[in-house]
Length: 113
Length: 113
Image 1 (cartoon, chains in turn blue, purple):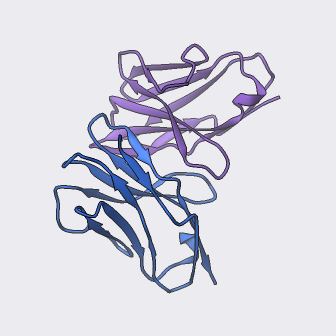
Image 2 (cartoon, one colour; image 1 turned 30 degrees about the horizontal axis):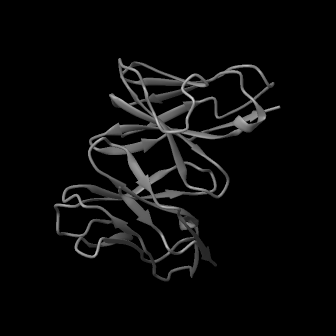
Image 3 (cartoon, chains in turn orange, red; image 1 turned 45 degrees about the vertical axis):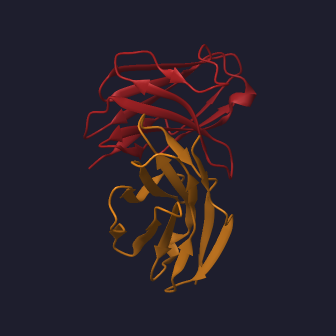
């Protein structure tokens, strides 16, 4: 069975600095999707970035980028130029086939002024 | 694009009553929707997968007679919590699948007195 591990329960970063959130997963599949979602205090889940496993190129969305290491089964999220609005819970998710997500336990990120 | 709404955003009810929560995909059609439950400071727990025109698939341990799911159209899925009890108090979140990505509603806070 697939599992997703986020080993950093909490992190903090100074405004304008860069932070990296880690995510590892376990699967025997070769084709799948990986996601990062952000859940701010409003509790609305917001898609941050999406990666298709067959694509070698790392996905980027403005200040957000991933380091996808398929062989190592690692999918870290880098946030550049951190902003106060980035303060949130961040969830890593894995999806294969039936559209069901396997979520990690989340990393609480606090951006400090 | 890919907006999902939920109604109501919060509801308080008496023990023993039933509560219906609606999940709508506003700008796309969704054959598959999902219902989650989230406890404070925890990850999302998948309750069931809702497929338009067919019976929902419930996760292990979720009582299907207590949490009734109906997905009668490509833009609407409903979750009815029947004979609610205080232990059903929680934050319920729906999502809709679009192009192998889930888009989430803003959630419903249910409090059962």
